[in-house]
Image (cartoon, rainbow over all chains, first blue to last red):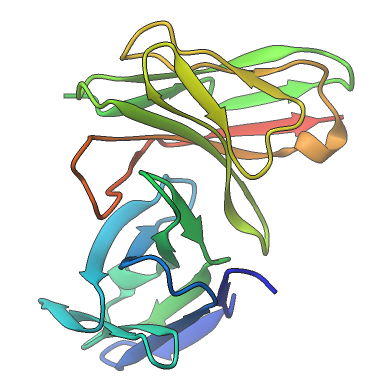
Length: 110
Length: 114
């Protein structure tokens, strides 16, 4: 079993839709969970991170962690074509190391 | 402020050849790391460094070598390239105290081994 499981998609939605991206993880020892966004042929860039359980909101994006079920979610409201990218979830894997999921490719079409 | 710079962006090698992927950062970050990205596998850690002169292995270190002689530079060496090393390689850096492991990535180096 991979430490962080993520459905690779692809996920295709119309502009304005609410997008839900999800990951599960298997190791409860670490506290930080993050979402990176990666545009085609570019390096990943940090989108959001959360500590422990609960929600964190930043504009149209909401990150949610449910530690009881080991579930990580990213919600995108009013999705835009510019949101089309691969979204990578990750958890801390030790000092300044990350364990990544496989990434979900999202396409938002006008 | 360039961030993390990787060279080359593209490279084609023949099996058995060696080469070095260069990585430089100008943010004075202590921590640097190399990941490879393969379809369906996500990003996997190859080697990392917590400071000049200190390196350690990650999840998939075989066939790769690293050194860290300065804070700024962290080159990745392929000793004898194999087709299984065809991948996109990303260098990343972060600073001590970024408990959330906020990595800054380079743009990537796309390597094909024939």
